[in-house]
Amino acid sequence: MLKLRDHLYIDGKWTAPAGREQIDVVNPATEELLGRIPSGTPEDVDLAVRAARAALEAWAETPLDRRAALLAAIQAGLAARQDEIATLISMEVGTPLKIAQRVQAGLPVADIGSIVDLAAGLSLQEIVGNSTIYREPKGVVACITPWNYPLHQVVSKVAPALLAGCTVVLKPSEVAPLTAFLLAEVAEAADLPPGVFNLVTGYGADVGEALATHPEVDMVSFTGSTTAGKRVATLAAQDVKRVALELGGKSASVILDDADLQKAVRATVNSCFLNAGQTCNALTRMLVPADLYEEAARIAIDTANSFTLGDPLAAETKLGPLVSALQRERVRSLIRSGIDEGATLLLGGDEAPADLAKGFFVKPTVFGRVTPRMQIAQTEIFGPVLCIMTYQSEDEAVSIANGTHYGLAGAVWSNDLARATRVAKRMKAGQVDINGARFNLLAPFGGWKQSGLGRELGRYGLEEFFEIKSIQT
Ligand code: NAD
Image 1 (spheres, rainbow, N blue to C red):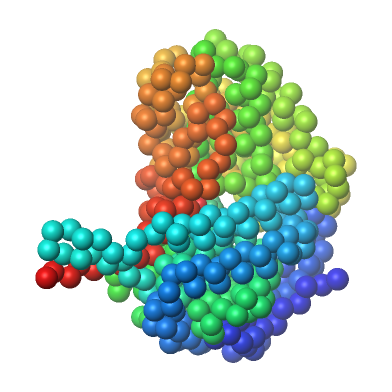
Image 2 (spheres, rainbow, N blue to C red):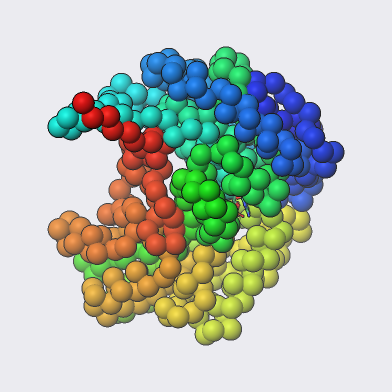
């Protein structure tokens, strides 16, 4: 059944958009129409921002524990609809259902829970000498989000912004917007005061840019590509808005010579291919000691071969399609560039999989003997493509790991924790995992260099939404 959405959520009401244009949402596995959403305009943005501005003072004065309780109600509302969320995202993004249940639907519920829990230990004022330092809400926040983990990326911004006392206008990705409507329904059912959370869907160039330039927006919290992030930051700089940017990555998995090679390679491939490689912190460059290359390549091929391509809703599927025809073409052309530049194609390639006539599928692809200057070693591919690179010394491994414009994440593998920690500390990245350590929702997430500005999640993520004032007595 088609998911037809023809209203925006503004000032606590489902509101008809100013324009008539709509955007098609396509199921990437079948190439069929999945739904339609309003293509919002600057007029819609203006209405939503004014509503957020009007609601700000009362929301900022609402006691912290009340704001936390409302967020907990939203968390419960999302938890109750978890199966629906998983299926919806599986259909709009192509994430295999089993993974969608855990990551696409489970993670957002856990995200909000972790933010609610922060409220108890949060101090909004502090004494420094003769000053009292106050943390006050930053104001009206525009949240602009991508499609790859659509609800997780939305709640990673919206929940801390609301807890901090900010009001929000959300513009989700036009490619995977459907769960944002569900969030608005849940917020409405939780009795969030009108204007505190608003939803305007549409394209980046229309709605996104109208938000970034609106004089009544105090902060833009953006997750997406580095190219669009730079544009948003440039626009927002015109009136010195605060900008938080969560951008792309090209993260390295540094496997040291004393690591458990089997475990390290398998985990790196699994990270690289999660969500068909459409994960910002995916480990897409696997760095191995030169004399372990053959063995590492064999394990990587073996692991990649276990990624069964197919219908995301089928139980046996481990690799779904890419999100769109455009994304598939980008990835195919990068695969071709790898071949042209002389990397060794060990598995996969740019041709469509023989047995899948429909859907934006790309075969699990592994390149060996990738060298640092190749385009596939420098550009974020955002598809199921692993690059294996070799190094001679620990110094060279660190230099290759740090040798891109990105700095979002990384991994180090070694049987010697002190050695792994030493290498991890030399990596210019926001998060580095040692020996496959699990994801920590309370740890700050974000990028160095062109991977971003600011942090998301946990206490550090919450801090982004406060303005600081000191009063001297
Ligand atoms: P994108 O940059 O194309 O779009 C992201 C959002 O920005 C969308 O809502 C889009 O409509 C909007 N947008 C686009 N152009 C805009 C403009 N000029 N002004 C305002 N808004 C604009 O990215 P995408 O293709 O949706 O997502 C994939 C990218 O996101 C990848 O680069 C990935 O690494 C990155 N990402 C980063 C993180 C992180 O936490 N660092 C997380 C997920 C995804």
